[in-house]
Length: 415
Image (cartoon, rainbow, N blue to C red):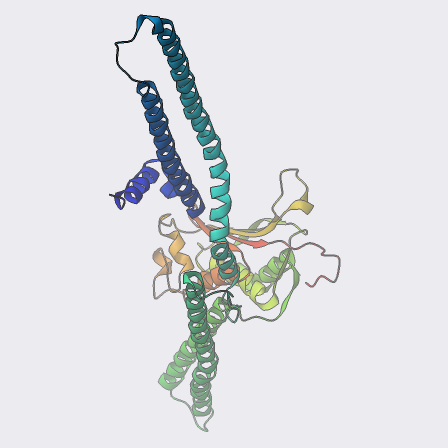
């Protein structure tokens, strides 16, 4: 019978919607429910005892009905006293029950606060573990929870999480070593093949036209493979936060440098740069090489997948707060929009995944490696930012890179 009480309490908690709340709320509700059950049972027992005592007191002074006439007045007096005593006992019983009920209500309210406090104390180690686990990222896997205390279930859980972090740290270290080794091992054969082509073409005597054509094609493919390898290595290192050249940078200067460096590509395709809006208050703390890579990749994407004679728009802004003052902005954004073919809005987010392309000119045989925007997304995440992609209804793509803003640009800012 007693085993069904917790089940009914759990059902009541679920019907009240507390299951969707926090563990602290559910524990508090359980404590209050148990208190009310025990208090109600105690109150009912007290009422039964009081009622039994009152009834026995009314029937206790029994006796025969045959009494001498000379004792009639005494008998009447005793009956009056008995009635008065019974009424007094009934009044005290009612007062006892009412007072107990009031006390139960007051203690029920108090038990809510006490239950909330006790539940908080019980769950405090779990909150500490949760906060510590959230602070641990791929860059700080060496940290551990290191929970002290008796060997109970909470410490067992903390030790299990520490063991998991240790395995993750070993896995990440192995992956970093693999990336470093792959960088060396894969570049060496590419360099050897490129050198062999140069030696073959440099031999005395005329070079057959077919050989020269084949060598040029192979060199193009080697250069493409080299760029693909470099992109893969950058993507892998970025995902592990492997950069040490962090500095305070003006995002507007980075965007201008990317546009200037691609002036020939813009002219070759006949593209027009529209509304070049640059906010000089947009400063970020980021890796110099990776931030330039972000701007280069986004603008390269806008050029490569654009229509001939089309346009691109580059804007850098410091997002304003509610009072309209730029100094209160918390983020900065690089927004690059371009013309081009109409893209499927439901699939645009796939462009941030490696080797994902959309549209007629985003096929596997098209230009580029399919890693440009995935590198941008990885760099943004490594700097606690975001990448947002939106298909334009008229055709083309809108790319927004949002990064945390840093202040104090006048003190040793690097551009």
